[in-house]
Image 1 (cartoon, rainbow over the protein chains, first blue to last red):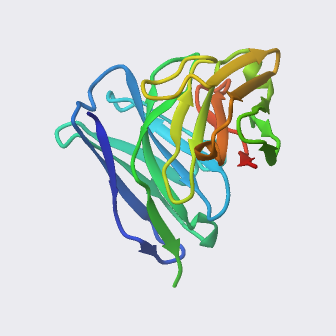
Image 2: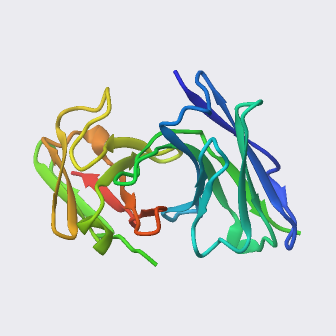
Image 3: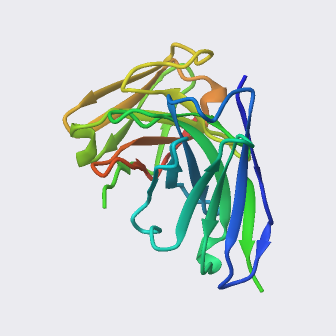
Length: 122
Length: 107
């Protein structure tokens, strides 16, 4: 049973970089069948796709965040990571990592982490 | 950027049928998936690729699509189906996009 677990600081100062890691257990991140994704949810709001990475290192980002976001993968640790630079209060959200089917025709997140709340505040 | 539009809220009487819709141009080219999110929990995939249910999802959940609109139907809604529901699909750039969510209340 594949499981995902987010980790990282829950508090980040404005203008600094938010860094989160997602650890994949029960399966290999090098499975070619999936994209490894980050999604966030602002308090009381809907879901926002941030981006994904393939095990090869190819990454895709939400155009509205593209200038500030980077997703990387460490296959030796079975982890992938999110970095979001120059954060503001608007980046305060619950951040999820999730597994997405690697299909050009379908986006479907079948496994999610429990989410980690990140607050941007001085 | 691509957008998916959902009605903010719908209600359904216990045991009745409710349809939740999701509209967007991307749905003309890509399949929709649907997620159920209960308070304090991560979303759960209930329908993928238009009308496929993951293991463990009751068959009262079904999906359909026509033109630029995808639908999630709950046939015989149960109290435990009260939740927020989100649609998502691929977009033309290869990324992902979510709808704004629909709050379903079971009366």
